Image (cartoon, rainbow, N blue to C red; front, side, top):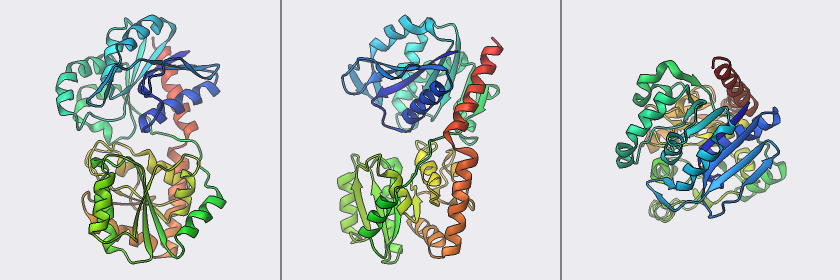
Length: 371
């Protein structure tokens, strides 16, 4: 069995790319050959060999438009290599990869991994919809990361093709030394951690506003960079919550688990369906950190964080509700310990990398058995 995954860009950055990388590495450890074809995000186009069973082919990007990497070379490269694979696994949304598949001449099985609808790029969706409809018709199976997102209107005509494949991650182990160092920077404070690109759909302004409702023994740490950095910095100053909210900038991968471990709670304040799953919630669970998230209509976010189990979900765009939920979990040690234990249990039951890889492998095997 030989697999080719089609993705948006390399070096890997976001959640979709993490899934693609983790599947590739996971399959290779099972003896399955799995390569990746993607557009280059840094100008480099030489292949990257992760190991003997996983190579990343990256093609030249000539322009980025409406969150899409335009790489005509992806079309010619896929046409050249497609006959080497039994299954092409395409990660949606990615119009460039879909176009490449359309023009590839590939006759094998196609797996569509439906991570998210196209929500914000409405003009792009109008142009892309005919190709998207072709992709869904061409697909042998459509993978959704949660039952909630399987109900999107875009998949209404292919419900018979849908399978649920929750995202799994590797174990995250906080460093005791780093946890102590972080906590020592905020002695006497209950640390609330949040993480993500500083963009509008993340709703960080509501988390910052929530600081006004929290007592002085709380501090909110927000990791990540993005175009709203200066705007959020100004909001923190205007609300006079500089002592309660800190923008950390980029959090290195090696220290990220320790921020989850140092925190009393992880907060996801996202407000739109662009946030379809939020791997950061799973990362928090892996570290036994309870979660406060939002009930985004049609998103898998409130399914990942099961309210009353791994944490609490509150309405979007509601700063006071965020603060109240944070206090409910963190102000009572027994309550916090129960949520912490259940968060870890939910990770073990649903979101481990080995589980995702094994389930995906079984889906592949059934596809090929029925061919």
